[in-house]
Image 1 (cartoon, helix red, strand yellow):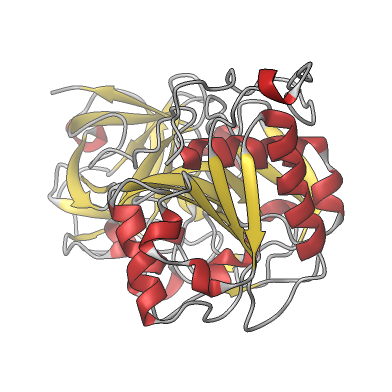
Image 2: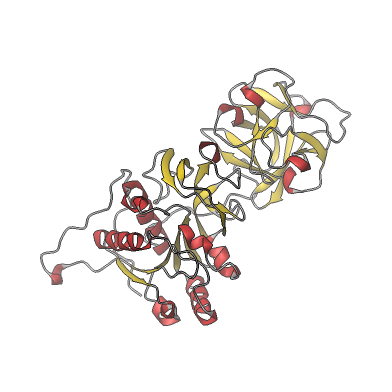
Length: 406
């Protein structure tokens, strides 16, 4: 395996296409490649017209940035001896079943030995019956609408694959929906705002690019990259470059999943709207199943104190003083405008919430069941208004301050 001792500087903050390596005066003076990447683009299902452009783009990025790219559609190269030559394997728009049992075992051994994986677009439409691969890619493809313009929300602007991007990034692509939401087991780098396009099968919370440390190796994936034009976009090319370097271990990055109970930790908190200062209020006892959860002026009373408890997979429950949990009605888990209630705690997904940063010192609370955000209807400041859930959109009506009171 080639050494990783001499690495290129970290990817810059601009939208530059590549990092240029000065030409050597002779072959003897040329610096050795910093790492090697295997690009694999075999398909047994749908075949994208953009594959040749994608492969050439990856070769160009390697040539301009000092790493070697070997491209193939020959699955027989998946042997332990051959994979050991590469710091990362890129599944570039693969589809269907592409490896046999022996080749799968070689890839599993490669990842477990510290190898890297990068997946582009339909890499998630690959090997549905191979659980190990499903874990490495992070989520499987479910469906997609027609190509359209949408807004990408960049959640991690420190990662080498997304540091150059603005906070929101409007682009044209084919937007994948996934069978499961990977958030909670991966480190989400960017999500797509479903309010800016018609996603068809709505996910609510909709990660689109992520990374993770998995099975002893490294993984980076983006659901973008369907179109030929994507590979001509300097911002997208720079994202690919950062993702490949991350997968190869050439740069370091935080790819850890969310903490067990979100960034604020367990405990008892008041939850107040960042814009109005109104508090989430369970009202006074006695409380019955189905009782409303409303907003009221913050007063520090027991009805405005919520206990955050670990619900697993990066989520938690919010329990009111009366002992009942913040709950999305079971028949409305994915409905915009569903009114929130209190219900006997039973640990289901409609009582599990993720706490995610949504700005400086504020958070959004996202229902695990439907991916919708805790929301003030119409952004009203009126007292006694029952709170609802709504598609996450980053507005002040969905931004909350959590203040520890225990």
